[in-house]
Image (cartoon, rainbow, N blue to C red; front, side, top):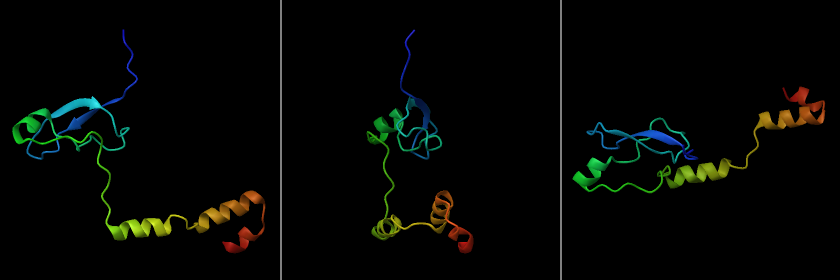
Length: 96
């Protein structure tokens, strides 16, 4: 008996009018509920759709990218307090 190292997941067709589902290799590590980023074979043949080789990434606007980049390196107050607690500083009591 063969053992498979790959994970599989149930996919649903991206075409909202189609109600097909199939089992395929899990490329998203089951991070999304039944993936809907692929078209079934019938829709590919019938409408000429092409499935991407891997899941599409979120498309962010330029403004969203700027905000993410700006906030990327900001420290949270919560993180500073927990760091002071670990070091044994008494200052963390004053912060709260």
